[in-house]
Structure formats: structure tokens, C-alpha cells
Image (cartoon, rainbow, N blue to C red):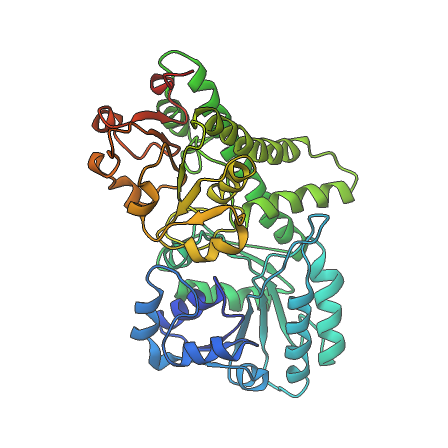
Length: 444
């Protein structure tokens, strides 16, 4: 069985390392952060992801981590680069960490006689492989890509909170290859790695790079369309966005994934990939009005909901925001709707409280100083005049009517993901949900 090295042990790198080990591969993790390396070697996950602690402990015999590039590259057959590519002000991705890794790898490959495959998994701008990565790798290593060494672009299509499951059972595997030999090696790896028999699509670098940002940009369009449908359904007697999207999703040309009218999309991928798509099209002098409109719809939705909440809060009233992660089952709060709404409300109000099962601490640096982080969901709900369910965590689905009632107050319960049965709360709260006309607020 091949030995794999993974450069970058963050939100995707650590689960990928552990998942490789679970499939029988020996894995060497590499990170420039010594504390991350030490955690892995102590079988402690450096990031929060469901199932990761168990996977690392169960497969500890096949996992080790280091800060030494020589140890990682010389000890492995395939190297996956999974480092951050932060967005720049114009919406593009910066390759500085990828290029730094390529430079370090190239130096080791100068002296390695055995054929080695480098796989760039980090999301990059189209043109990066041919124009930046290949020239640098060849210059530093003194070897020819596609002959002496192999190179592939292989971004993963995963969602935080379900990374391990997504890795093992992808809809498809995409490989941008420098040559057939490199593509064949990576395809054979995935035939052993994946639990399902997912299609493997092999192509050149540029088409793979375009596909990656195009796919996520397309999904954001689908999300924003569903959110627009939700707003329409709120205005029509009997309107129910779930009934509409359920029917739409039955059409094979559309499908039901990401067709849930609710809050704006967020996280570390969708917003920035859509903006990168806009930037790339603009650079080519191609108009991309659909992607631009998608971004605008997404941004406007948080403002509209904040205005609606503000209109319902009595003078000096308290607002409770439940959900600060951008989605359930993760502690990532980047570009989350809950954080955006809390910050918008704090511009006009002082009594904003927030809580999340995992993301309370990670959201703290992103929140206005006027937002108070509650110690528990019970504390967050206490005396609330308006309660906003901003993500669909199981903890929020388990809220009981008795959790809301206090001092004969009848709070407004704004269920943005429609996770609760409104009939259960009719005696203790005024229920309202995105996408349902039947739950129109009494004051509207």
C-alpha cells in the first residue's frame, strides 16, 4: 500500500489524513505549526469535525506528523497540498502558501530518484497550475513535470460537518493532470480510497480549475434562487416554500440538494468561490450578471431579516440569536448568517445575546463588542423578546415550549430554518418562519 503525505493539517487536511489511514494507507502529516503536529502525534485532532477523534485514535498506527519536509516527501509516494488560499480584496485567491509548499517540496525532489506525485488540493484561481505552480516546481526541483515528477490538481467537494463522509463517498472525483501517468496514479489511489464507485473525471489543469469555482458558484445561485422563492411564498396566501422546492427538486434537471429557502449561504467556500468566479470572468472581460446577482441577493437577505427583527423588538427589548456557525455540526463562523444578523442588530440595539453549540468561541472575534455571548442556550433564551433560530442544529430542534415561557412573556419565535412545529408553541410564543405565509406576524 502506498504511503501518503499531507501538507497542511487544517479543516480539510486533518480529516483527509485520518480518512486515508482508515482506508489502509500509511500517512505522514506535515504542518509548519509545531503545536498542530504535536496534537496529531498525541492522537488529538487539531480541528473540530464529527468523527475525526475516533478515526485518528482507531488508525493511530498508520499516522504520524512532522514539520520536516524531507521526512514527509522522502517517506511517501504521493503528496497532497491542502493549505489555505486566502481571498484577496479583488476576490481572487492568493497562492502564497501553495507556492511556499511547492518550493519546499521541490528542493527535496531535486535529490529524490523515485517518481513522486504532487497533488494540489487547495482551491486556486484558473491558470495557477500552468502559469505559477509548474514553472516554480520545475525551477526548484530541476525536473520536468509530467516526465520526472507528476503533478495533479484535485480539489475536494466537501462540506464541513460531514467531511469524512463526503471524502469517502464523493459524487465524483475530479483530476486535473499534467500527464496520463500522473492521472492514472491518482485515479488508482481514489479507487482504493473511496467507499463508493464514484465517477473519476480526468482533464487538463485549466478545465479542472474552472470546474471547481464554477461548481460552487452554480450552487450559490441555486441557494439564492431558493431564498428568493421563500420571500415570494411569504407574500402569497397559503405559500409554503418547502412544498414548492420539494416539487422542483423532483425534476432531475434541478435536483433537491441546496434547494432550501432559508438564510444566506456562508462559510469558507461558497461566498469566496462565487466572488472568485466573478473576478475571473471580469479579468477575461466576460459579463457574469448571474453570479453578481447571486452575491447581491445573498448579502441583501441578511439586511432584510435584520430590518424585520428590528421592527418586532419593543423598546429596550432583548434579541436572542441561536446559531453562530455558518451551518450545523461545525464550529466555523466565517461569513455565517447568525453573525451577520447579530452585528447588524447591534448597530441599533444594545441587548443582543447569542449562543451556538460549537461556534460561540470561534464567532467571538467576528462579533460586535455589543453582542453578548451567552453561557448556555437557556441563558440566551431567558427573558428574550425575539428569538431567532439562525441554523438548524439538533439542539434547536429540541427546544421545548417550556424553555420559552417566562414572566407571562410571549416572545416572537423566528424560525429561519423551519425546524419547529408551530402548533407546539402557539400558546407560549408568536411563531414566524421564513418561507411560510401562514405564520405571518400579528403586527404585520
